[in-house]
Amino acid sequence: MSIYGKEVTPLYSNMPRDDAYKACLMNFIRRAYDLEPISLTPAKRGFFGETWRLGTAKAHYFLKLDYSAHQSIYAHSFPIIAHLCNHGIDFISKIVCTTQGELCARFDGAVLGVFDWIDGENIENDDTKPPEYQMLAQIYAVPAEGLDIPREDFSSGVADQFYDQWDRLKRGPANEIVAMFEQSREKITHRAGRLRFFSDKCKGDTSGFVITHGDAGGNVLVDGDRYFIVDWDYAMLAPPERDAWVMCCREVWAQELFHNTVKGRGIGYTLRPERLAFYAYHFFFYYLTEFLSAFFCTGSAPGLTEYLIEPGWVEGCFQGADKIQP
Image 1: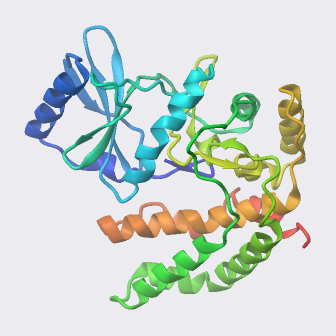
Image 2: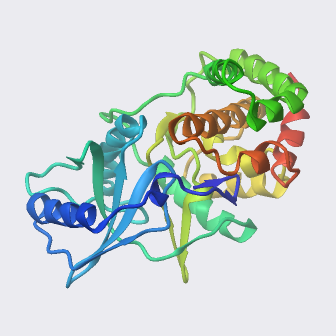
């Protein structure tokens, strides 16, 4: 998983699995998907998902199993992916259906998805922004009518969720994460206040809503001159700022590139500063809650120190958001 362009150590993809587990999974694939596996190797991708590369004599496939509390969200993403593919989007992972025509399956208590394998390296930098925005503009042009998809409500509830998690931590044994949050209290309080302000400012306006990814930049795969966007678990009907804020909060050239790209696809939308600010602060708390959810589940939160404490280019996003006036 990539957060603001920084790779974060996967959790469930690192779980040790013995030969008996792998044999059971391969047998399940034979029965449920009518594929004949000849190899099963761990795949690099994934944070909450356990990921594998499945080989057959004819092709390779990407397997993602979600054992976490997020599995219902994962299951809900399959019809959205199918909807995009049915509307000609060819730069996302194509779903392989079961023999019964189901988009996903259940295995060992997990939600299992099988996809066509996409070669490529997960890259995010300034050079990947033009193709990323081109792909997003094509997504935005896809109609959402008849699609069961979550809709943005501009809630500030993610900050409340984080504070609940922080309280839970403080009720337990003293640990370095509690100390880290205390060290960052002023920053956290400031961003919570800004999130609540811009939440109130944005609520009630659903104009310009399109199908968004939520972390497209962190999920771009590059294979030579081909580009793909993967991991559509958190697709949502929302304004384009949900995808654009990371760069467009801080870089004028990125705003201009984004505007010109969506305009070139016939989408007359101009990024709004209050929505950029909302998403900057929203995602700050969203990723904090993801780190803590992982900690409560596994006892580990790899990458949290780098995310919260160490200065990096991501701070430029919040410096830009802090300049947005009420």
